[in-house]
Amino acid sequence: AQSVSQHNHHVILSEAASLELGCNYSYGGTVNLFWYVQYPGQHLQLLLKYFSGDPLVKGIKGFEAEFIKSKFSFNLRKPSVQWSDTAEYFCAVRREYGNKLVFGAGTILRVKS
Amino acid sequence: DAGITQSPRHKVTETGTPVTLRCHQTENHRYMYWYRQDPGHGLRLIHYSYGVKDTDKGEVSDGYSVSRSKTEDFLLTLESATSSQTSVYFCAISESLGQGYEQYFGPGTRLTVT
Image 1 (cartoon, chains in turn brown, red):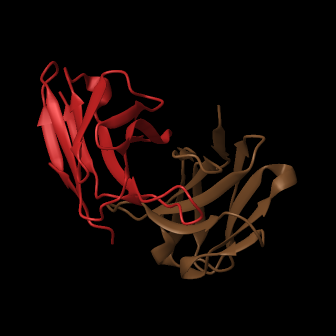
Image 2: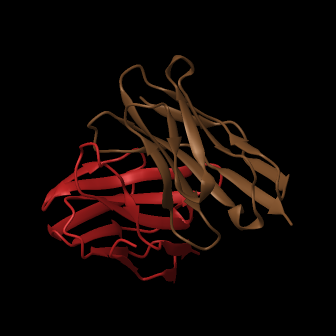
């Protein structure tokens, strides 16, 4: 069965600090990869997704993620975080052409102003 | 935002009572999903549907049943609620399985079982 690991459950950063959230998955075949964000009290929204092509994917709000196939990783990055980035971030994996997502446990990011 | 509504948005119920949560979409998407969200566990799939009357189990389906009699509605039923089912429940939809695959989420239902 597929599984998704997010390394840090809680991250606290000051504004303008750089962010990197780790995500690793276990599945040997072709996968599609996603990062979702959940702002306090809201539903999940898609930040970015990777299907194929350039392994560096740019998403909304200045976020990007890099797919490293050899490391089974899809880490999320942002060069300079803002207070408004305070949220919970979820990595998710889908087997190519599958009809389900498998989510990681989530990382809660708190940005101090 | 995708046209997904969930009802009720909040519910408190007693152990042993039946509970039904409703997900309604206006997007005519084929696939619908029910997840539960618990701290430290992320989102876990309960059941999903790939068409009217076509459903399948997810990873945490015990104690839950679903029905989909119309494209737009996907119901989640807790036949006899237990305290372990206290959670936030999210519905999601997706249109296809191709390159554009993405799940869109509803606003969630907070269920407390006392």
